[in-house]
Figure 1 (cartoon, rainbow, N blue to C red):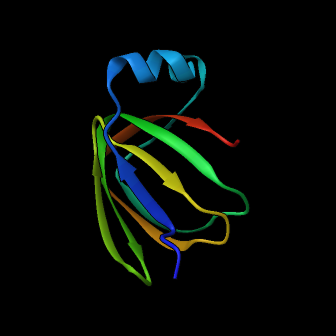
Figure 2 (figure 1 turned 90 degrees about the horizontal axis):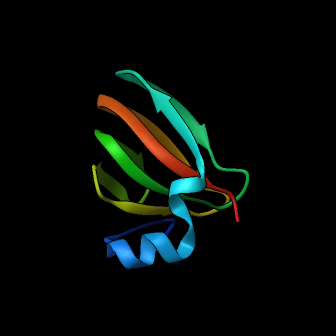
Length: 90
């Protein structure tokens, strides 16, 4: 089974090269909600902490993580600290 959540750590040079800091910023306070990805999403966490619960397990995501969520992923977002992220839908 292909991974539906991919967590990486990018160097600042790679962040600059991809133009990530020009992407849309999404923010959400502490909360818990179901989510279904209708397309791939790439995001860089600016601040906050979230546990993303999937059929493949739980993923702890925090400031500095670059995350790819794959199309079709069904999950629960459990935001532990208010989150801000740059996001892109390639």
